[in-house]
Length: 300
Image 1 (tube, rainbow, N blue to C red):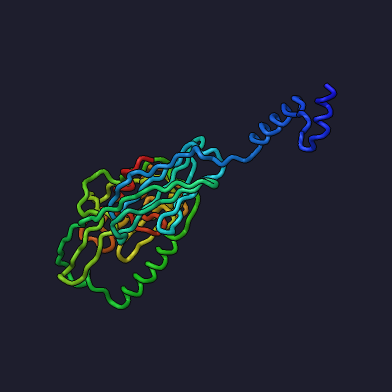
Image 2: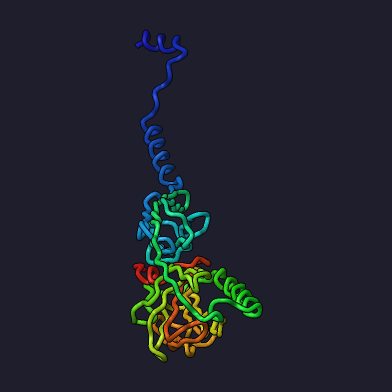
């Protein structure tokens, strides 16, 4: 024993034994520290539907399993996609591409807290039909006064479609008139061999006076007689989503009215630049023209 004590005193590098109580305390401290450290939410899932779309189509981004209380964000082509809640830890958003978007693979980046997910969206080249029409000259070529009026109306409508309000839409969009389509979205119309226009909605066949119903819940932001659209109703569904109803014989709503999905908002007519009774139905998403039938087909 004396020899061991003497050897220990002579070894200046020999450390004293660590008490077991001290070691247990250190283990407890490290364990508590691990639980107290902030952990970023790495469990959320993001999906895009459909993953393959045509030019001018909308799509849905859905995020689930999100632990954070604030909604996620998403960006496509430097434009933000707006989310709303769809349950516990669930958020849903509508995005879209316009008719002029080049075909290709695009990245939709979803961010929640410090975490990101990249979703791939395929935009397919779409062969839109071409039709040739022969119309009276006054239906094709505008007078200086008509041009001035249409420019004023265009500026007003652009201001409306660029306004973003809170969510009002509720679930799937529905067709406003249950008849067949006479002219589809994106059709190129060549009138009198010279004037070319792209159809930025769908024409739905109808009989004079048939009911036209709201495609979703929203607020009436315009009831007016327009040069091209005739008697027109525009609904704001929130988050930059608008639906447009043109050529009505009569509107059944007033500006600022709140409507529910399926409410009658007007009657089929042929007002404006129309050759017969029908409904021109269109949709806007954050000032982008999108196919309204594709909007209706989305599972929301």
